[in-house]
Image 1 (cartoon, one colour):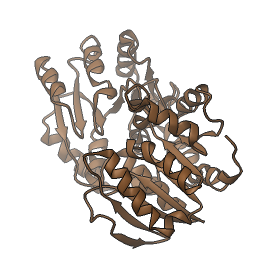
Image 2: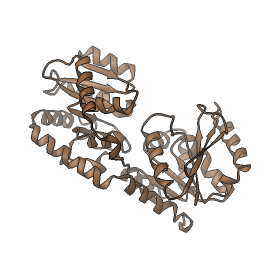
Image 3: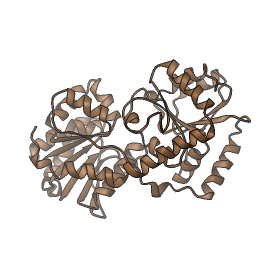
Image 4: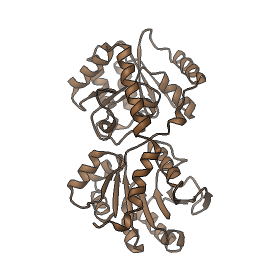
Length: 374
């Protein structure tokens, strides 16, 4: 089977969606041919590069999205690899949601739409709402990374073929070496953490939905306020930096250039915080869990598909008293109990959220798309 996969999120792009896209495609290519069509201006337009069990083509992006998609349509009309493929896949991004449902109708091909998190969240309550509703109605099948998204999309009564396709991690790529621990110690010394402070880390593109403002406001009222150092790994919005300085909160910011650096930054931390207001199923959960770093997280999106109070520290999003109680509870919990929670989470990730189980979900959907009726 040949699959035509369209996305804005694929390496060399950075971020969780690009990493997940790469992982899923690599796994799919063990079973089928997958040709990637990547909306990007970082590579030469329309140049096709051969890859193992598929190829890669960069689709140019213009300021006018209509021109981008009309150009794509012309390209598709002259490309038998796409028109003769057995399925089209739209992975995230507004360009995919806007263009692929129409293109699938014109080429009379089945279409799988993959919702990760932000792609759905930013569209459903915006002026793009009609695009996403049209896409949901006319997709052959929909894959969602969270149960919450599955339920919300089914409730719209526009499509019956909506499936839960949770995230995964290849734990073999996250083995901790002595050199990783040494680097973590070196980095900890460099940031000059106050003595006896706990380091709480935040990892990724820390945009507004990640709830950093809410976390800081709650932290100020907890027993951890003067006992914690916040370590931000990734891009941090300027107003958050101002807020940290205004409240004299000990903090540091790092931007790792490699996975080795990223792992060391995780290992520096006594816990990783994910205080999201809404979210998909963050890769941060899987990375921290694999490295046995405890997690403090809100109860939104796909977070509670994986985390609970037996394997992490959960609070109710936007309920300040719940956050404060959870922070105080974390601080009062002994090291042995925290380690037991981390061990339970690591075992869950290693046994349930594997690339093999992840790709099995996608294969079941894609290989049965011709039998679905909407």
